[in-house]
Amino acid sequence: MCALYVDVGYLLSSAAVRVTGTSLRSGVHVDYPPLIDALVQQAKKISELPVLRVHWYDSARDGVPDQPQQRIGEVPKVKLRLGRFAIDGQQKGVDLRIGLDLVTHARNGAADVFILLSGDDDLTEAVEEAQVHGVQVILLAVPSAEGKPHGISRHLIRAADGLEILPPESVDETVMKVEMPPAPPTTQPVAVALPAGSPPTRATPRDFAGLGHSGAPRPSSSVLTYSATTGREPQVATEYEDPEGLADQIDRVVTNVLTAFRTSASGEALAELRAGRPSIPRDIDKALLTDLSERRGEFDLSDQVRHKLRAQFWKRCDEAP
Image (tube, rainbow, N blue to C red; front, side, top):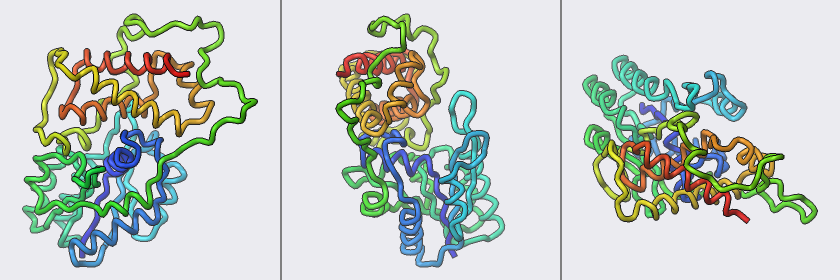
């Protein structure tokens, strides 16, 4: 038998990058039943064994599943395993659950081959421990637009028994770009209006003073530890640098994320974005940080780079027609 372990955060953010050019999950719609079936079929093909069970790891507010997650948990042979979102928006418990399950299931001989759909460097030790108990662990990666494995840690690749890539059609046929229909001509453009009583001003450094990490999670290591595009090892930006090309990278990331958000968000969501300024919604901020880290091949971004990234986001928002 083989068992499939799916890091949903990695799966959907990587699929979103392939479909929209950014990791913003709200920018895509997912047809889950055929996607899960495609994952099962690929696991069977890789292992040449029947699939015992699909372990589905995701986060939920207070650990309570939403409606899509409830429906996924009702799919036969799918085990829903939920972490939670912390106050600062970071995922909690997902990596730990995956790691514990890998080791426990290997120790108990639950299956002969484990197929792990994740790229998280933090799972390296769990993979190695599972192998000690005689289990093969094979990585399954989401393909980038170029057909290469997206966002996989090199340490994890070295620890695993193999690396396979999910067929592109498995993503292309089940993950679709969300595009809201244009508003009727009579609809007022509330999406670009500032809150009532607020003067139309541009962002200034004061707007972002003390923003730091509040309301914005650090990027998940599942998509940051290795850049399939650059092939560079993880780096940590501890000192502020302004190398040539940084401004262009920031602008490209901001443009991609903002475009994906505008095409998928309702008028109410666009208005809420403006009203909540200077705080950037958790999912948008995470996509900004994740995409820039991936583009630069860095594990983490300095506070100064994060500051520039968020300032550029609001600058582009102000320039919207």
